[in-house]
Length: 307
Ligand code: HEC
Image 1: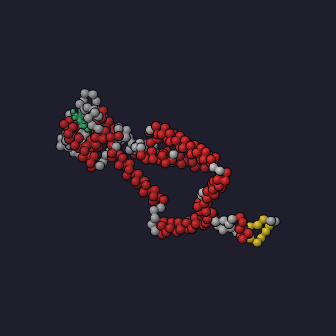
Image 2: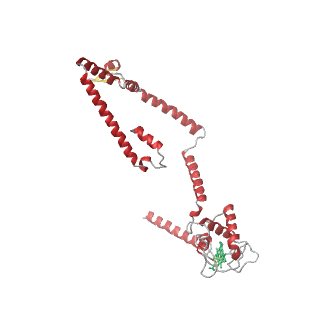
Image 3: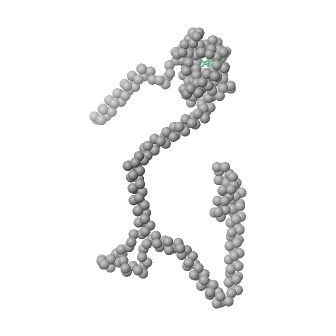
């Protein structure tokens, strides 16, 4: 049954599922096999008993005696190996190893250590020597270094994942892209689709100047991404691009636009909107507030300690 199960799992192509899960009919096949096995067993047992009854009484005795011997020798090899590994003296020979003290009839045997244990002990010594040499004498990788290596591998894997999964970005997860390739791709999109209204250098025309600090609809990659994706105010001319550009492309062109910040276009359009301040960056005022809060907390702790 085990072999049949293994063979079925190996030969039936079931993707990353177990064959037995994907094709429940395999249960049926195995059940049939089991029935067959039982049937064969029943038939051979009854044949045996019929033939046994056909024997003469002496032949029956001989047969039984043979059976006995066969059973005894069945696992002789294994039994011998087990005895060797245990290494203990058989009870008949215990007299040879009894020590010569005797406490109220309690005696002590000087049994040898079991070979399996002794060899296991030697193995640990060899292991310890190799371990010591490898990690404390030569430059083996310690656990903390292993940790660092794994973290580094994970970081690379995440980066790789992000590279292949760029289209997963949306307005909440989008981040400013700084890689050359992304900005170049953003420029291609910008020159092809946006420059008619914003000018090639972002100086502005029908659309506003994208190189200054003033934004009508908010600066920063999240707002810019949102503007590109959803469009500007009604009737102003900035349409929603989400049906035409993939999320990754909107992130690229948005990042490209932001890379134009602070450049001087040939004919800059006058600023429109308000100066954009990133709400995530702490303003100097907020930093002062935090210090005040911190020192108040510290004072409270001191008071409590005093009490
Ligand atoms: C048909 C002209 C036109 C095209 C093409 C166009 N825009 Fe605009 N864009 C505008 C106008 C007009 C506004 C101002 C919208 C408003 O006032 O609501 C604007 C606003 C913006 C803003 C917000 C600026 C701010 O100050 O908040 C961004 C960012 C922007 N566009 C990016 C793009 C990108 C990227 C493309 C190409 C995919 C593009 N635009 C294509 C006309 C255009």
